[in-house]
Image 1 (tube, rainbow over the protein chains, first blue to last red):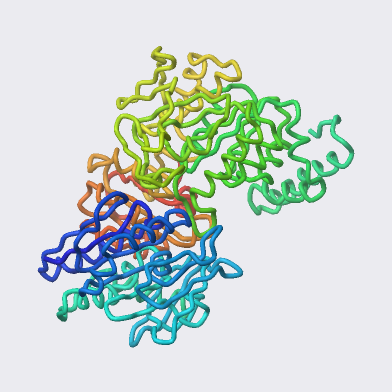
Image 2: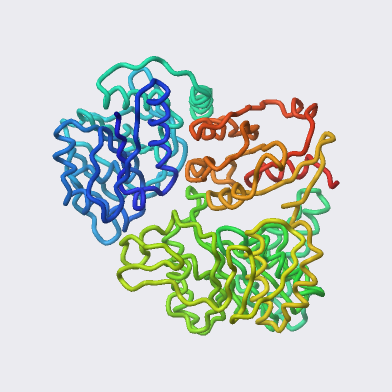
Length: 226
Length: 405
């Protein structure tokens, strides 16, 4: 049984972020893997899961989500092998600190060595990043500039858009993957959904051909203009 | 057309509005409301305030239903009513509407982010706050920030007459301590944007009424729309016949009814006028295209899709969904993952629009069958009625492509 843990969708679900859980569950079940989506909401104890998802959110909810995760045994569970996929505010929360209204250095969960400061302007628009042989395509809408510590590898190299800092997007460390491609990033990037599933399941998966592949190809063409 | 009571500068500005809009229309470049309004506001930044003076103005805003509700206020009022009917719902559009008509009765549909500016400039007799949920986040403020901005309006104008949705926690938060509020409670609340308390961020509890452990709770409504769509005001049932379909439109009409009560219109007179309205700017109307009848429904955000899907099934014929992502739609269609497409009852949905692959992927992951149509001519050979749900620019394309029945 694969358990996908959606963390605080009541706080971090600004823009279709729940779509990532649906995409992962559908793609796992299509390979015959029994899958359950479990949620942790404000006031709940942290659910047990193989793959945790963190979405985007506004300042207040983002702060609260960071507090709740710091107070929970989230860090221990990730240390014990649980995987994490975080987008947007979720990406910032897992780092050392992030900027919110009234506090430029609000403490994050500290799972990765990443610091987010307030950028001069919001980064809004289509984005694309090279990740190995693949292209991550999506939409970003955030005001942060994220600086990665020396030992922390970015997830992708920007081709279009801003990402962390105009050069790279997100980060990858062990079983943790994060990107600024917000909302249902995995709907646009089926290959990335499978990378996460293979990571969480520790097994390789048969190819799955869905209309999502056509969507990915079309978005890559549209965003990169070729 | 131009009121002589205006200062010279404003008269010139108003002439500029009329001249620009006339030119745009003659050139066939559209209704021209925004272009003219911008010219006018450049010539006289206080033009909206001056044009509004001495008129009875009802302002309508909210994420969903503001165009329909504004139209229902206009129709329900009767007689000559000035209104921004072209969808231009920022000050340039309001200026154009007030230059085009000198009627003392005015209804203004207002973009959520412009409510403060328009209330300050027009001193409305009533402000209708329908609901507040996420819509096109890539270009508008995030929804809670909007609620905070609305709250500043009620602080600045504490006596403002407000007709507000008691069932929407963000609206109630936005109303704050305003003194002159009429609350309306409605059954189908969109809650995904207000699961955490706007005051303290703890989780809200929803039952018959919503509440939070911090004390923030649903106010007592004097007007109630119940599950069956029956309307009561101060405990008395108010009969309402509507010519447009949909539960959500009964809710919109209730807000219109109560706003019109502020200007002395009786529910009976309003109801009689509203019974004859069968479509609002093409919405809800049945049209024909390639020999097929198509019911056109506009939905541009999760809450809007939710109310439409709750009332649709196979008996309504084929379901087509058309999605674009132009600036007017919001450039990012991520919102389709917040919309409850799991509720689609059709086995197969026809996917159209520039983002047809996005909606087809969404429906696939919701377990629905899809047909992606690249060339709409393929649809012309089909038979039977169609219900088309489209977002803003896709809706406009299909409206222009089709004809009245």
